Figure 1 (spheres, one colour):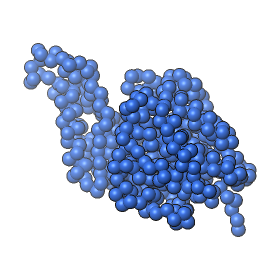
Figure 2 (tube, rainbow, N blue to C red):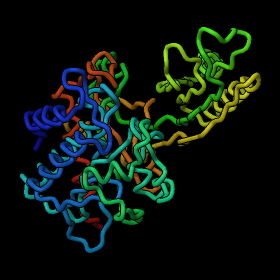
Figure 3 (cartoon, one colour):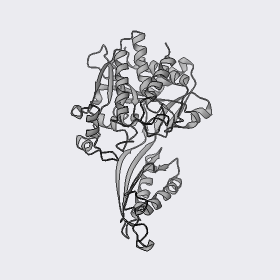
Length: 411
């Protein structure tokens, strides 16, 4: 049986409505009211597909179909359901919908797995509200401690634990997931780049995921009146920050090997038109396919930042996230390719330039990912779109692989 394209489209359309910016893309920040609306919808569908629904202490959602083997590890399918500000309808959400569709197909075909099937919807993969990214998967696997979590706050100073209370997520349920309870993790994601579309291939089987680090840089200066403070007497935090940010593309180009550096978030204080900025806080996202290039770029960025110290300027750097490049499981990749061949769906091998929760899970279990094309290579914007037919084909491939993974072993 193949995936139900109409049902998939309906899920995408309905989740797309849970946004704080109607008409201007999807803005669904973790622990927001839009998060609550989306999680209620996801849980409702999980129940409809005969899954037992639970949430952990971070608000990750699990829908479980028990297997015939007692205490057997689960095959997990899913993705994240948060978004970047003014993002698209497919990033993350498509992977959650794929999980729901796999569960629906198990129900319709009256499949009783030997190994449990779990559908998962993860929080804060993007890091748009609380920074760092991959928070749901990192917290689930114990990489985010309870003490770390208590200090997490958004740009408005709202603590994560207080935001959780607003949507009835209970941090007291926080518990590290035992890796022995996970047999495999599979995720479908939009490519977020142009390769599949340009080559007219509708499926990418991911070989490896790029390494990445995220830094938060603080530049501290001295506030003053914009009209009465001479230019040679200023300690302007924004000017120093601008020097740093302007030099980052050169570091990336000099490192080469596909290294990219991005400043995507910048906050200026006190943010008055007639006040010299006394503090600037901004993000630096560094990515490359090889760890040595990530580390080289981090070192060069840190040296650049320190050079701004002096004349009333002080800088500090906090590393919020570091994950080395990850190769995905070869046996899972083979299963996905075999399913594509059997279904006569063209595919190619591809590497991911974006980070995914599979990066975290790959240290604990066998992981596999399927990409589908992104129109014009666009993502993290309202124009983000993927063909529902491609999404249905990708879902069918995941479903076929999951059927194999949940079967009882034979000798």
